[in-house]
Image (cartoon, rainbow, N blue to C red; front, top):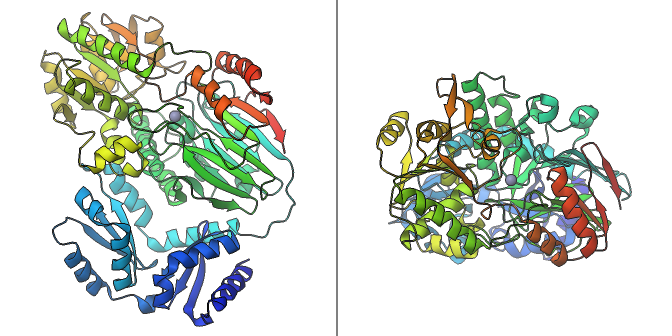
Length: 633
Ligand SMILES: [Zn+2]
């Protein structure tokens, strides 16, 4: 395959009057073709040349400088330090790729480094320049991920080459029917996993776990019926960083999978953070984890981050493109283009079809579409409130509690809802809708927010503008970050009213439990849920009215806690589409699909929304259970 590509690339360059010597090496770099050139003019004009080549060979191309034309490291370092004087930045060399990474958290620097300026700098040094944001406050996850990825540069290069060899292998079978098998998330919320098989390829869409399950057979995707799958798997796609979509991924590596995992850029660090947190929790509670750090590291090394909109070959007959899903940072709707347009599948993952503070609404326009697979978490639950009314209700609950001398505990999932609620609270305090009292941030959500601060290009237009103007967005004077048990104890001793945002969101662990234990006996306090509570979790039990619960303390002991505090739930902040939003998405999605498959909802939600869908769209409607298969195309 490489030799065929090589001659196509050489022929094209010859047509430009460039001889063979301009190219010193052609290599696979994951799903891209890397072309190394020893001709500075080709390097300088590489954007135009790459664009023409992509049109010609229909594959992603990156043109890199050959070692012979790169200026020496020390000279480049001095030159860049001079050019970037006055800004704080780290300059890192990747010699294997001919890339200089400029790392910084200084917004002024990013404003200064316009595309033209970067291009001018690149022409001077004959290295590619990559800009990378560091978090606004230190993040253990990002440090760890860097070690995972770059601890040994050679191995990662070798991994990408092998991925490329499989992606660009010769296609054997003509396009034909596509089979979609639900391995998890059929008529349930949790362990999302779909096996998509064409005649040529096998791809997994998500591979999550079920938070509330007690037995492995209920916790993991039903891969047990497909013993040969791992050996024949071409790719895994992770739509976003929630455990019910990626929690079982390292298990695939434990059982021998050595292939690519595609996801957006923010999804990678967020996912690593959640995997490591899972291991921490298992260690604390004395449970035997499904996998170890070794497999977490491996899953991250095999990951291939993609931006929204980048059309990418992942097997000889499948191209994937990610679109904004509006659910959490970096959440993606995956568009799968099969067999040169033979069949097109859109899998929404979790999606929000409404603008939020943090994100724009999910994309609903695609180049082609025959089969739509969509989540239906809230398929049976119309949300009677607009976003405005939701915020008013939320602020009323808080004001009432605080004015009577109580505190508010809001348990939050670390990724998504936490950052959205932070922005809402900041706004409510600034506009004096709620009293100006301390907002305590505790648990994994602090780490997640650090990751959020690295990827403003994934925010909604408004939030991005605000961020680029230099507003901190997340770290305002109102927020107190808790980073140690002693700090936490100090806070718990003060009897002043406060608002606590703490993980985990379903009270399955984390500092939220410590706060709950301490706030439980006072009926003036309020436990306020703003996210979905899965069946079987402690959060769900409390919502159903339990007044006496058993929790695991930090020391790992079981303790019975009586609940006197009040409990409320506000629904409209969900990162999932409401029933109305799912239906309006179906009305507006374009082009119109022939098949609609509902997953990721409890049976009642799936049946209810499917019933309504039959009345508004002319398509085959499917409501599969786990292990059901649908043949399309
Ligand atoms: Zn999710």
